[in-house]
Every structure is written in C-alpha cells, then in structure tokens.
Length: 583
Image (cartoon, rainbow, N blue to C red; front, side, top):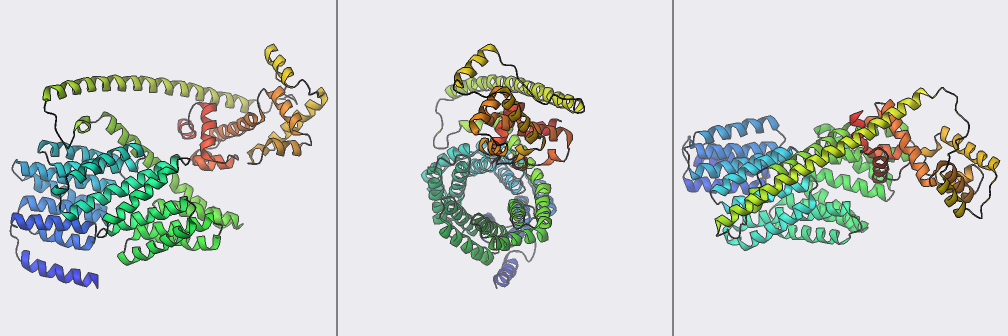
C-alpha cells in the first residue's frame, strides 16, 4: 500500500514539476533538498522520488545536488556501480557552475555525501578524507550548520574505528553547540542531528565498556544516551530501531535477560514493518547469542541459521553473518556433530581474517590522517572566534612546531621498537629452526639446570623444610617430560593440581621440582610450553598462521585471547599477528 501511495505521489509531482525539463525556482530547489534529506532517514523510496524530480531541472546546481543525493541513495540499496556513476556526474555538473559562494557551499555538500557513501562501504579512511576536504570549504564561508555536520561525522568515524574516548569528547562538545544554536535549525533538522549525536554517544560508551568491563557506570551512560536518542527519533525509524537494539544489548550486559529478550523480539517486529533488513538480521543474531549464552541451543539455532541463510542469499558477509557462523560452529561442537561444526567454523575462519584486516587497516589510516592531516579544525571554536588573530597565529606556529617534534620523536621510537622486536623475533625463529635440526640427535633423559650460587642459597631458604632425594626429583622430571611429549600442556586444565595428580605426587613437591630444575614457577613453565608450541606451529605450518588470535589461544588451552596475546608478546616482543605476517 505504501509503495502504491509513493508511486501516485511521484506521478502527481512529476506532472507538477517535470512534464518538461525546466529550471526550478530557488524556493522549489530548497524545498526538494529538505525533503530528500528528511526522507533519507524515513523512507528511501520517497527520497529517491524527490531526487528524481530535482534531476529534471536544467540548472547545473540542482542537477549536481540531485545526482550526489542519488549516489548516496543507491549506496543505501547496495548498488555500488550506480552510486559511483551518479557521484562522478554530480561533480561534472558542479564544474559547469561559475565560481561563487554558492558553488563552494554545494561542493562541501558533495564531499559530505561522499564521506557518508564511503562510510557505508566501510572505507572509513576515505570517509574521513572527504569530511576533512568538505570542512575546509565550509570554513571558508562560515557555514556553521555544515561545520557541525562535518564534526559530527568525523566523530562517527572515530567511533567506528575504536577511538571511543575521542568520539565521546567531540560529540559532547558538539551536542552543547547544537543546543546553543537551536534557532539555526528547523525542528526536523534539530531532531535529526540530536538523534545521530546521541546514538553515537551511546554506542561509544557501550563499546568503551566492552574494553573496560570493570567500569559499570559506562553502561549506565550508554543507556542514558540511547534513551535520549529515542526521544528525538520518532520520525527516524533507523535510529529508533538502532537505539532500541542497543538498549537490548545494555539489558543483556546487565544480566537482565527477560528485558533483553523482549526488546529483541520487538525489534524484529518493527524491522519487518519498516523493511529494515540490517536491523532484522542484528536482532535475530542477538536472540541467537542470548539463547546460546543461556544454554538454550535449539532456540539459538533457529535465529542463527536465519541470519546465515539470509546472508547467503543476499551475499552480505557482515558482522552478524560472521558471528552467527562462529556460534553455529560452537553449538554443533557441543551437540557432537563434527560435520556441521567443521562447516560453520570454516565459513567463520575464511571470512574473519578479511574483515578484521580491513577494519584494522581502516583504523590505522584514520588515525594517520587525524594525526598528520590539516589540524586547523581543532582550533575552531564554533561559539565564538578569536578577536586577536595575531595571537592565534603565534599559537598555531608553536603548536605546529611541537607537533612536528612530537611526530619525529614518535617515528624514531617506533622504528627503534620495531627493530628491537624484529631482532628478537628473528632470533626466536633461528632458535626453533636449530631445535628442529637437532630433533634426531640423542637427548639426555633429564634436563638439570645449574643454578647460580645466590639462587641456590635462596632456593634452600625457601624450601628449608622440604627434602626430596635426587632419584625422586629425577622421576618427577621424567614424568613431566613424558607429559610434554604427549602435548598434555595444550589442555586448558593443565594446572599444578592436575599435573600433580597425573604423575602421582603432591603440588608442593611438583612446585619445588619445577622451580629448582627449570628455574621458574609452574604457571610460567606451563605458559612457556604453550607459547613455544605456537611459535613452532607458526614457523612450520602455514595454515596455522591464518587462524585468528582467539582460535590460536583456544588451541593451546588459554582461557582468552587477551592473556594469550600478552604472554606471546612477552616471549617474542611482537603480537601473534605481527609474528605470523613477518615469517
């Protein structure tokens, strides 16, 4: 029914404006421009309709804006080739305009749309580049509204690549500026920018919590801004659904399973009503994840398979698709179905590295451009300008000198750190190659480490009441080496208690012998075996190097990827990914 009404409205407006190609009045152009922007957040098909009407004008300015709007709208429908075609066409019409303030303003609009388009494609570095170029143009003509848009969009890029604290700082400042300049906006414009700012603030706080889970107050802040988003999003279904989804996530993180479940079901219903496929997919994944965590595996499979099947049909390999396959593999592993567990784990591994590498590269590019690009926008205060321009110029000169010194210092430090890490890594690789060559040489049955006199005295002090004869020590070491040969240390339960029970001794004797013979605690001894195994596999097995950090950590019995990566870096001086890429 909605499509029929939109089509009829399109015909009526066509008759009014576009029976023949004619130039729109400035007022007609501005009205259509507002409608295009407004309906982009409400109903993409309606926005398309208004853009096509503007496209029928024979004015270069109108045709430039119409084509850049169409470029963004086609991108929203994942028609990349059409989007690129329309974007180039927009600049062709712009070039035909005479030089003027109007042309500068329109060019900034084109760059803003260009940033939005690249953002939707996941090209955050290119998005930032467009926003920075557009910002320079808006500064030339003191276009406050557009400057606010650019600064908000740059904050969104920071949030996307993980610069959460920077995004929070910039958005809170920007939100205050918008409030103080509310008179510059229509009600619809004001609500849209407030909705966008608040949902990104909520997302930044939530993401920041995921990195600092001891700081519970971050979740409360996230919930506060998501609720504020809802108050400004009555006519913006995309943001309304996004905020509700995120509120469901907050409930889930707070262990309020009942409210989280209800919220996700509400979102599935709203997303189907508004034909918002991405929100529908995310809500289904969230329900699948919720049921997995609460051990309701059959219910989890229903929602996770739905995400996977829709993604396979649409050929969209987004985050929901990736995570769904991860949990599908885990569930089938629990259900002892190796064939399906293998199938979904392979899909996950085949796509994980690509998505992580792309995001990592985008984050590096964004941070590079933020650090070395034109930083003049950081000196801008939208609320008031410096009256004394001489003072400003001096401050800027000092700032740039300090910036150059800082960059040089960081570059030198980075080069030194890299060289140091590479030397350590190369030495390790050579050491493991040598060990491989010696595999066939006869080895002594027992490894006895000679202690320095001071270490021996200290050990005797610590174990003054402990007495084990040498034969018994040798027996314990012999059994430990046998466990090493069987790769028992790859199990997550390879603990002091487990090993003591396995070799039929007590934890005190075992701890004493490991400390005396290997010169380290049992935990250090166990971690070193695991890390040495990983290094050996990376050097000798090219497939192993393709695994994610999480997968490698789990393969050697670490409880999480963070503790594994920390132990690996301590041993090698570089991260697992860096080690793999440099072999």
